[in-house]
Every structure is written in C-alpha cells, then in structure tokens.
Length: 137
Image 1 (cartoon, rainbow, N blue to C red):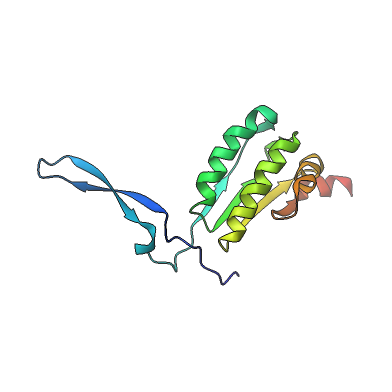
Image 2 (image 1 turned 90 degrees about the vertical axis):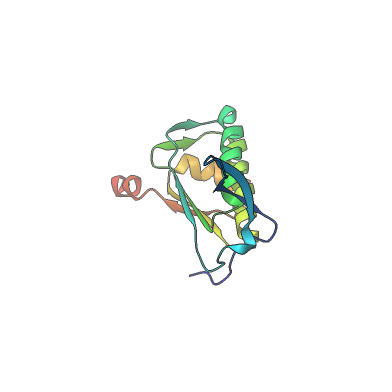
C-alpha cells in the first residue's frame, strides 16, 4: 500500500451553507482543511470503442479525478482503446496522479488497448483481461 498522501494545499472544494433566507449559498473550502489521511478511489467504466474523437471527453474526466482522487481505476472490460491519443490522455492523467502520490490502474486491458497504453508511456499500471487470457489456453 502506498504511504504518500496527496498534496491538496491549493485545491478548493465547493461547499454549501444555508443563508439567512434558508436558501443554500455556494462557498469554497480549501482542501487543506480536509483530513489528509482519507483515500478517495474512483472507478471509471467506459463502454464501446474509445477513439480519437472521445479523447477530449476522457481528458476532461481524468483531469477532474486526477486533481482529487488517490487512486483511479479505469476498467476497460467493456471498452477498447483504438487511438494513441486516448492512450496519451490516460498516460498524462497517470503521471498527474503519480506526482501527487497516487496511482492510475487500468484493469481488464485487452491486447489492443495494451498496445495503445504501452505506446504512450509507463505510468499507468496495466492489468490484463484474465477472461481473454483464459480463452487462449
């Protein structure tokens, strides 16, 4: 298990407080005020083919999670990466999370998806789709 805690000093989280009229008003609370011993894990389960046109949406989602999650699990069982650009987006997010002491795990990775991810770098942890390996035996 990792012993490093994410750096949250300048990140601000939205919070809501009641006003004198009873309505809720938005305010921000510095993330540094939150316990640094908590771990946040997020799991993403894309479906279908993730290609060049989907890379921008994937980047937005992973950027948001990499700013605050300790571990991001990208479950690729129902998805196939078919773009080196998508692999680069995942690699960038893995690097961001790693810099903060976390990790991005890609699970159920097919051979085709592994090729896209491996070409982009080595910061994401890749775990093969065991169901595909079992059918090859």
